[in-house]
Amino acid sequence: MLFTNNPPAINMTMVGFGQAGTRMADLFAAIKDKSGTPVYNCLALNSNDGDLKGLAHIPESNQVSLELGGLGKNPEKAMRVIDENEDAKEKLKQFITQRVRPQDDLVLFFAGLGGGTGTSTIVKSIEEFNDFHNKPIIKKELIKLQQATPPAEFKTNIKKYMAQAVKNAEEKTVKIGVIVTLPVRSDGPDVLRQVNDFTQRIWKLAKDKSKGIAFVIFADNQQFADDFEKLAENERKALKVDNYRDYANLTIRDVIHEMNTATNGGGTSVVFDKQDFKRLILEHQGCLVINKVEADINSVKNEHDIKDMFIKSIQGSLLHQPVELLEKQEDGKMLAQKVHHVGLLAVLAPDKEISSSFMDTAKEAVINEVPINGTVFNGYIVDKNNRKASIYTFFKTDALPLRLSKGLVNEYQEYIERQRKFIYKDSSIEAIAATNDEEDFDMDLDLADLGIDLGEETVGIEENAEDTFDVDIDALDFDNLED
Image 1 (cartoon, rainbow, N blue to C red):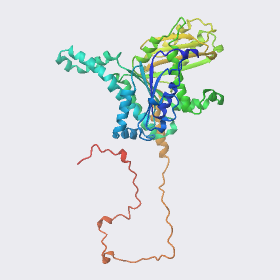
Image 2: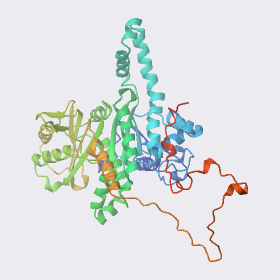
Image 3: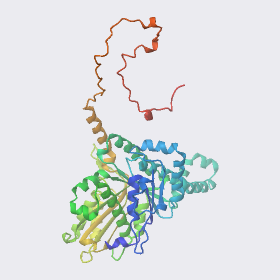
Image 4: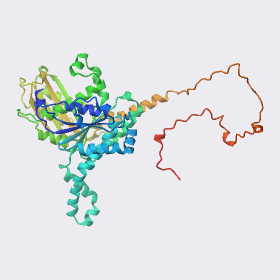
């Protein structure tokens, strides 16, 4: 793919959190231009020094450790640990406010959900980044509105003016993109429960226009694991991946870089340019859905073949399960999820002579597939592309991947139902029988005669000796204790 050598349409800073997030950012750091200069500015934050040692491409000067040791697969506990550790909290704040310098058009935050460090720090970092970089801009706009409005009017309609300040500041604020990975089913019910909680927190932040989050991608490790299992051994060797995690990181890196460079190309009659791509990625909020469909160039005979590839692509998703854009109601009406701008991009071999009208045909077909509220940007480029025809579709929507909107809850409930089928036995240590050297006594002896007073506090100890207690101290609520 020669087009991947194009300069990026959107300049991006990549920030990885935790083990999974830093590995994703490290792959972006491996991309260099012709002069050997990194294309993307990449940084990494983890809970301990050891977890940063595996990074091959992010410079050590861009790596920060909270020096907390491992935080394990418990993001709730990790958040408490960071909150209670002033040094770690200050390091995280300095990393976001001083090291992550928003000189680019977009700052991408990466993390794996289900782990401790990435899940907990990405939520805190979104808030820290917004408070430091974007809130002052919004506040400045609000002050302008206050100065131009009668005091009584401003006070009575403060919500209206706050919304207007956010809108006025939109083009000046630094946009954040969030890419997080959902865990595999085998990680267990507690991980699923916590991930369900943290995805809700992230989605709530993403829908808040004042936070400056341009999009969220909920990439799904379960889908990557399933796809990785289908790869032949020679395909795995060609990709240089040994497990589904490496495969996931490579897939995420490649598709984002390909879209970002292909839209800065040209030379064809229907061009999807960098300004179009910027609008699609940076305007509005929501879940960014990306798909890529490929076919051997010899199997693509005419514009109808390409149209069919576009329809197949818009109906699916490369990084997670499809989103449900239309849902039929009991009264027969269709409930639609809002879709903002849509991008349609084709990469064709230079010797494939197909009229450029195929883009109009594909655009018409896609419009009939999705409830579009924004603009459709479409174009194609010519590239050798390993003798393949590549079709990319991408759009932003209020809808969520099916596994996230319904699946995690169902998976958790399945675990609980499965557990109810088991009866858990109580284990005990078998006692060693007394030897013949010991005498058995059966005497009616009143210990009070010997001056020993057991007192009332011992009553009932024997009959309760078999009771066991399993209390999760961390789960107790100390907020509303009565005096």
